[in-house]
Image 1 (cartoon, helix red, strand yellow):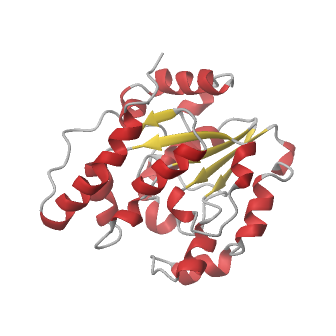
Image 2 (image 1 turned 120 degrees about the vertical axis):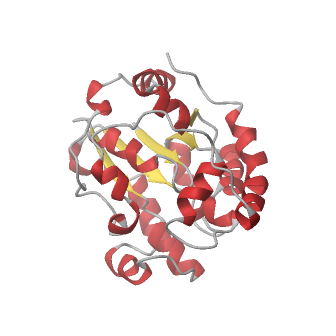
Length: 235
């Protein structure tokens, strides 16, 4: 099985990658189109130069690996992807050969978390619009990070049921610290998950953004709500 897990940034996506990576039957891949996205757009991100040096920047080569032999001889391949990385002209037909899953988080939480790592985000930086467009082409189970944090085992069991995969309790805990599969950008973005050994508990009240942040949340909210109404429930 090849799983393409689609989400915007700051969506619990790294914790989900670690959950699947802690299974003995999976190999994981961290944001394979990040370097091609940076190279194609010229956008300035933290650690841009290091990312372009350390990772493959040719989107065609990345796409070929997505559907090539699964590394390590494992039966299953989990790929952490971001819809915003799939800029116009990048190959996307490979996703038809994957189980596509869509991970969401309320935009108020995404904006608050993202802005703490990179200033002045725009709508296209947080991926809600692109995720809706990608979902329409490659639909699949929709899961919400709030539900995962509220009921980790129930949601992971529901997801496994939805995609025809046996649940593995190893998904609920992982060793603290970085993983060898992390992208080089992990030192900037992954501090919280590196300190974790499992999914954190339920989050508190939604942040109450002001000014530009509030306008960004309002712009993203309709896209979030379009997919959130389709999310699966824990078992």
